[in-house]
Image 1 (cartoon, rainbow, N blue to C red):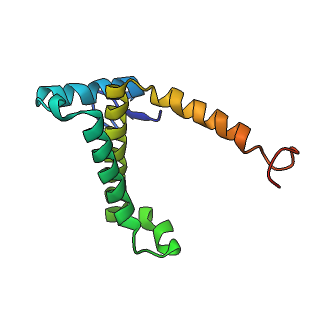
Image 2: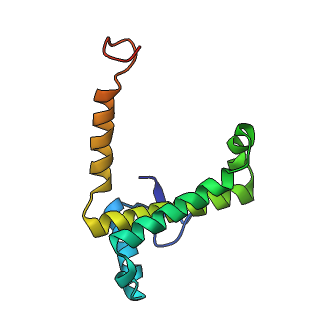
Length: 128
Protein backbone atom coordinates (compact mmCIF):
# COMPACT_ATOMS: atom_id res chain seq x y z
CA UNK A 1 0.00 0.00 0.00
CA UNK A 2 1.06 3.59 -0.43
CA UNK A 3 2.71 5.40 2.46
CA UNK A 4 0.46 7.56 4.56
CA UNK A 5 1.09 10.13 7.21
CA UNK A 6 2.46 8.69 10.43
CA UNK A 7 1.74 9.83 13.97
CA UNK A 8 2.86 13.34 13.13
CA UNK A 9 0.34 13.58 10.30
CA UNK A 10 0.70 13.73 6.57
CA UNK A 11 3.83 15.46 5.40
CA UNK A 12 5.45 15.34 8.84
CA UNK A 13 8.34 13.26 7.57
CA UNK A 14 7.16 10.34 9.71
CA UNK A 15 5.81 8.09 6.98
CA UNK A 16 4.28 4.69 7.75
CA UNK A 17 2.88 1.94 5.58
CA UNK A 18 -0.64 0.90 6.52
CA UNK A 19 -1.75 -2.66 5.99
CA UNK A 20 -5.24 -3.77 5.14
CA UNK A 21 -5.43 -5.60 8.48
CA UNK A 22 -4.43 -2.45 10.38
CA UNK A 23 -7.08 -0.42 8.61
CA UNK A 24 -9.67 -3.11 9.29
CA UNK A 25 -8.79 -3.08 12.99
CA UNK A 26 -9.00 0.73 13.06
CA UNK A 27 -12.43 0.65 11.40
CA UNK A 28 -13.59 -2.03 13.84
CA UNK A 29 -12.40 0.02 16.84
CA UNK A 30 -14.14 3.11 15.44
CA UNK A 31 -17.45 1.22 15.06
CA UNK A 32 -17.08 -0.51 18.44
CA UNK A 33 -16.48 2.80 20.26
CA UNK A 34 -19.79 4.06 18.86
CA UNK A 35 -21.69 0.79 19.45
CA UNK A 36 -22.26 0.43 15.71
CA UNK A 37 -21.25 -3.24 15.61
CA UNK A 38 -24.86 -4.26 16.05
CA UNK A 39 -25.61 -2.70 12.67
CA UNK A 40 -22.57 -4.10 10.87
CA UNK A 41 -24.16 -7.29 9.64
CA UNK A 42 -23.09 -8.72 6.28
CA UNK A 43 -26.43 -7.62 4.76
CA UNK A 44 -26.18 -4.05 6.04
CA UNK A 45 -22.53 -3.67 5.08
CA UNK A 46 -23.18 -5.05 1.58
CA UNK A 47 -26.06 -2.59 1.19
CA UNK A 48 -23.96 0.31 2.47
CA UNK A 49 -21.16 -0.66 0.07
CA UNK A 50 -23.63 -0.61 -2.80
CA UNK A 51 -24.94 2.82 -1.78
CA UNK A 52 -21.44 4.27 -1.56
CA UNK A 53 -20.50 2.77 -4.93
CA UNK A 54 -23.62 4.40 -6.38
CA UNK A 55 -22.53 7.74 -4.91
CA UNK A 56 -19.21 7.34 -6.73
CA UNK A 57 -21.07 6.59 -9.96
CA UNK A 58 -23.29 9.63 -9.39
CA UNK A 59 -20.27 11.94 -9.73
CA UNK A 60 -19.75 10.71 -13.29
CA UNK A 61 -23.38 10.00 -14.22
CA UNK A 62 -24.05 12.74 -16.78
CA UNK A 63 -20.48 13.55 -17.82
CA UNK A 64 -19.15 12.86 -21.27
CA UNK A 65 -16.18 10.48 -21.45
CA UNK A 66 -13.94 13.51 -21.94
CA UNK A 67 -15.38 15.33 -18.90
CA UNK A 68 -15.10 12.22 -16.75
CA UNK A 69 -11.42 11.89 -17.67
CA UNK A 70 -10.84 15.41 -16.30
CA UNK A 71 -12.70 15.06 -12.97
CA UNK A 72 -9.51 14.63 -10.96
CA UNK A 73 -8.04 17.83 -12.41
CA UNK A 74 -10.68 19.83 -10.54
CA UNK A 75 -9.96 20.23 -6.81
CA UNK A 76 -13.60 19.91 -5.76
CA UNK A 77 -14.25 16.98 -8.10
CA UNK A 78 -11.11 15.19 -6.93
CA UNK A 79 -12.10 15.65 -3.28
CA UNK A 80 -15.56 14.20 -3.96
CA UNK A 81 -14.07 11.18 -5.78
CA UNK A 82 -11.54 10.58 -3.01
CA UNK A 83 -14.26 10.75 -0.34
CA UNK A 84 -16.45 8.24 -2.16
CA UNK A 85 -13.52 5.91 -2.87
CA UNK A 86 -12.71 6.03 0.85
CA UNK A 87 -16.33 5.23 1.73
CA UNK A 88 -16.43 2.29 -0.71
CA UNK A 89 -13.14 0.92 0.57
CA UNK A 90 -14.13 1.37 4.22
CA UNK A 91 -17.36 -0.57 3.78
CA UNK A 92 -15.63 -3.25 1.71
CA UNK A 93 -12.96 -3.73 4.37
CA UNK A 94 -15.57 -3.84 7.12
CA UNK A 95 -17.62 -6.35 5.14
CA UNK A 96 -14.57 -8.56 4.59
CA UNK A 97 -13.70 -8.37 8.29
CA UNK A 98 -17.21 -9.42 9.35
CA UNK A 99 -17.50 -12.33 6.91
CA UNK A 100 -13.87 -13.47 7.27
CA UNK A 101 -12.63 -12.80 3.74
CA UNK A 102 -9.01 -11.80 3.18
CA UNK A 103 -9.56 -9.14 0.50
CA UNK A 104 -6.03 -9.30 -0.89
CA UNK A 105 -6.08 -13.10 -1.11
CA UNK A 106 -9.51 -12.98 -2.76
CA UNK A 107 -8.25 -10.43 -5.30
CA UNK A 108 -5.11 -12.41 -6.02
CA UNK A 109 -7.12 -15.59 -6.60
CA UNK A 110 -9.52 -13.71 -8.90
CA UNK A 111 -6.65 -12.25 -10.94
CA UNK A 112 -5.16 -15.73 -11.31
CA UNK A 113 -8.51 -17.15 -12.49
CA UNK A 114 -8.88 -14.29 -14.97
CA UNK A 115 -5.35 -14.81 -16.30
CA UNK A 116 -6.31 -18.41 -17.02
CA UNK A 117 -9.73 -17.54 -18.47
CA UNK A 118 -8.43 -14.65 -20.57
CA UNK A 119 -4.86 -15.38 -21.71
CA UNK A 120 -2.80 -12.69 -23.37
CA UNK A 121 -3.36 -12.34 -27.11
CA UNK A 122 -0.87 -14.27 -29.20
CA UNK A 123 -0.47 -17.18 -26.79
CA UNK A 124 -2.68 -19.38 -28.92
CA UNK A 125 -5.23 -19.77 -26.16
CA UNK A 126 -7.16 -16.52 -26.30
CA UNK A 127 -10.38 -15.76 -28.08
CA UNK A 128 -8.53 -14.04 -30.95
